[in-house]
Length: 276
Ligand SMILES: C[S@@+](CC[C@H](N)C(=O)[O-])C[C@H]1O[C@@H](n2cnc3c(N)ncnc32)[C@H](O)[C@@H]1O
Image 1 (cartoon, protein in one colour):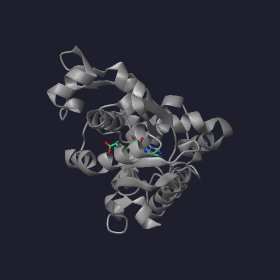
Image 2 (cartoon, helix red, strand yellow):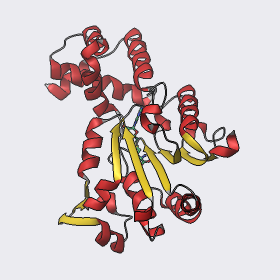
Image 3 (cartoon, rainbow, N blue to C red):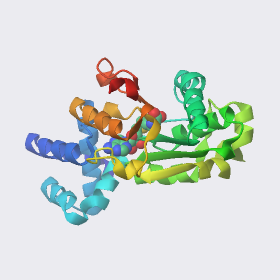
């Protein structure tokens, strides 16, 4: 049908409001302007797939107690997972030069524990990049207890992340020495991260719109949180809530790095201790 039918299904202004409110409540995601069309198309696509004939019926299906799996399916087509290894290289250069050495030295002098988070990790490249940097900076990794946790709302992305198979475009900023050390070549344009790297990252399904982040921190505090290119999909109120919740689970001297053009001026890169 099906792509042509997708274009004929149109939400009324009341239905738009209902779905917008639903997404905001469930995931913090905002659909306005150009993204409104994406929302409409994704909903129409799922309705066609399921043979559901009205928006109202689909809305009720989503809201049912067993509607979580359907919400997940819908989010697959609504979340944007664009990412690659060493994305925005200057930020990773700054992490390598300033932030990580400080965290490592502090851990060396104390608990020898490092807990880092990639929040909104998509297919895992950011989290794996963090481990690559740490491996370069720590000559004696076995004397540390390092955990890199990575979470996303999209279960499909997480599955791909765990598998760790990437095309040429995703590894374009990985230098040949690092490629040799951490990747197997699977074919002409396909790479898979080696087991050492796969074992180093804990991937977890988690919605940043959860009321608190204890399920993410699991009783510990993060030394560093990267939440890059995620907050752009949230409205300012949700951005503030997310940042407040991060503050509850980041160590006093820890770091939060985010990229949120919407709120750049009011929320610069934060060294958490300085905010308290
Ligand atoms: C563009 S990717 C960013 C990937 C990586 N952080 C980077 O900067 O390269 C945005 C990710 O945020 C995830 N995301 C969106 N809303 C989320 C939510 N409420 N909770 C967790 N992850 C979410 C999406 O599924 C997507 O994988």
